[in-house]
Structures are given as C-alpha cells and as structure tokens.
Image 1 (cartoon, protein in one colour):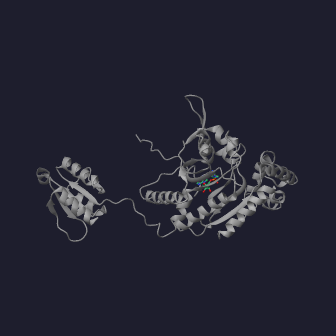
Image 2: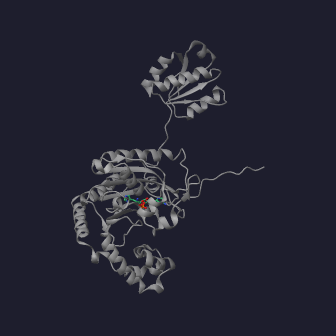
Image 3: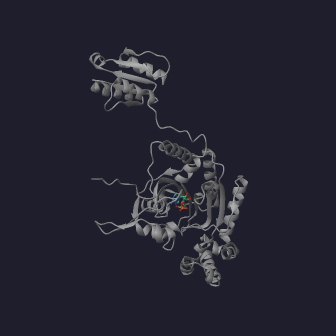
Length: 422
Ligand code: HAM
C-alpha cells in the first residue's frame, strides 16, 4: 500500500539547513541595526481577532476582501485570523498594555505573516516581515529617521540597486474629497473600467489607481491628482520631510500614484523598490497612520512605520558574492566511539561544558567510517573513544588538519590542546 506523502501548503516555504545561515545572518544584522536606532523588540500572537484587521486595514482592501486566513474557533465560536501584517497587532499590543502612558514608543517585530495571494517568486502565502513602528511622534523628523534607517540597512547589507519612492496622501478629509473627485472622473469613463474597478467606484475608487490593467493605463494616467487639493498641514509636513531628506543627502523619487494597499495610512507614504526582483519589486513599504491608535480604542496618537519582506531581501542578498557562501555552524570536535558509548557521551558533555562545539557520532559504523565522517564534518579534531580509553578514563585525540599523530591523554589535556587550536 502506498502511503500518502504530505507536502507543505502551497506558497508556504521550508527553510533548509543550506538556507538557514542566511536567515540567521540577516536576522543578526537586523537586531544590531535596530539597536543602533534605539528600537525595542515586541512579540505578539500569530492569531488575532478578525475584527482587528478588518477595522485597521479596511474592509474594502485586497487583504481583507480576499487574502485573509480567517476561521471560526470551533471551541468557542471566536472569529480569528492569521495575522496578514503586524501594524494592527502592534497597535493593539500598545493600547492593551498602556505602553503610551510611559511616553512615545519605538518598537519593532519580526515573524511570519499570512496572505492568501497567488504564489509566485517573491510572493508567498506565508512570508516574513521585519516591521518598525514609532508611536507618539507627530513631526516629520520621525518619518525622516525611519527612511534614513532603511537606507542605512541597505548600506549595511550591501544592497545598491534600491530606490525610494515617496508620496503624501493627505488627511482623511483630503482623501474623502479626493475620493469623490476620482469617482466623478471615473464615472465619465465607465466603459473602459474592468469589473473590479467598477465595483471599486463605489467602495474605494483610490484603489483603481493601483490597477495593473493595461487597458486602463491611459485613463488612470489622466486621473486628477490628490496633490491639487492637499490640506495645508499635510503639505507643510511633506515639504519639511522632503527638505530633511534633502539635507541628509537621501535621494527619492516623488510618485503621486503611490497610495499603498492598506486604509490606515495618511500623509507620508513610501516604498523601496528594486529592478532586480521582477514583478515583486517592493522590498519595504510604510508611512504614517495617525488615526489608527484612536480607531482601535486608544488616545489619539500620531504614528509612523514600515515593514520589509525578508524573503525579498534574501533573494537580493543571494545575488551578492559575500553573502553567497555562508555555512552553518561547523563542529570543532568530532567524537568517534566504539564500545564506549557511555564514556563518549560524558566526554562530549565535558567538552561542551567548556564551550567547545561537538558533533557526536550516533548510529551504526566502525571507526573507519566514523573517521571519514569526522574528516568531512569540518572539525579540527577527532576525539576517539574505545574500550581502553573507557577503562582508563582517557581519550585519544587526533588532529584532522595537517600531519599530527593520534595520542592518548587525559580529558583535560585534550581540552587544553583543543582550546589552544580552535
Ligand atoms: P505591506 O506593503 O503590505 O505593508 O507589506 C510590507 C512588505 O512585506 C512588502 O513591501 C513586501 O516586501 C512584503 N510582503 C508583503 N506581502 C508579501 C507576500 N505575499 N510575499 C512576500 N513578501 C510580502 C505592511 O504590511 C504594513 N504593515 C507596513 C507598515 C508598517 N506600515 C506602517 N508600519
């Protein structure tokens, strides 16, 4: 009888031993980078009440309409969702734990997010984000800090082919007025609109600007711009931000079509894009969300943040030679044994206690095959244990590099040699 073999869920990836050193190196770089800007890590659950995402991301966005993994908890009937992003959870955490009573917060998180999108290279159903959120800061200097921070990370990682796109989408009142103007404009062109855009006319006409349908490119190009009617405070905020970036020597491109796919944004929005990843060109996106804390039941609090996709960053890093040759942890000592398993396990523990990385032979195999494995393991020494070593409470030490001979000695003598040669 053939036994069914299970496959990972489509769009959800395994990380194999050959890839995990890259993940670890990226995560380590992220931690050091975040610490250098004074941001503190938070962790929140992978599952949250569905309403949290509907209320923050918006009920007529792609994420909420068709990409959320939502389910009813069979035990208590709660409507739950696998988190599709982190900003909503971060704000929930901050409100629930009264963090803003302690003053403004600079926070970050990393972990898997879930969206039921059509999988392709760079777009997955389980993907990983590193998100950074600054809550309680109203001025454009925080927008600038966040942007300069991302630029510093690209520099640390050695990424060069990335560029910054910047826009402002104004206050919610500006957007409400703009929505009406856009609706009126597109109503005059309904024959050209596809079905989805016609539906969006009533629900969220701003999202029509995001359409990739080439048949609509021309009318989208001719659509009125939000900038023609921007509120004064957003205008001042945006002008100052541009000046700050300019003073800091940070290049950017103004993109009036950049609206982002989540409803909580206002004023500043930005994205970092690369030409190297095909259709999934955005490696980082973010902006201001000054209304979200209040919308989720907290005190009115300005906020700004961004998140980047780690799979996309890793895909870029793989193209850089220094990143392309990373190995997992190699052992310093290989413990080979025959007929002395108990003594071998004890010796391995003594070595580890002293801080040595030890690979212990497990399973079948005589000394000859074990020594073959020892030689390919990357270890500098083999510690060999047989009946005689066990009887005398000694070990045999064999250097695996160079010409050194195998020698019998006490465990502490072996340890001293290992320590001074690894
Ligand atoms: P987002 O633009 O939806 O924003 O996602 C941020 C980044 O996550 C994207 O630029 C991309 O690199 C990565 N990403 C998104 N979806 C996928 C996917 N299906 N597969 C692989 N990578 C993906 C947010 O999530 C906001 N919470 C960002 C933010 C934080 N805004 C303010 N604070």
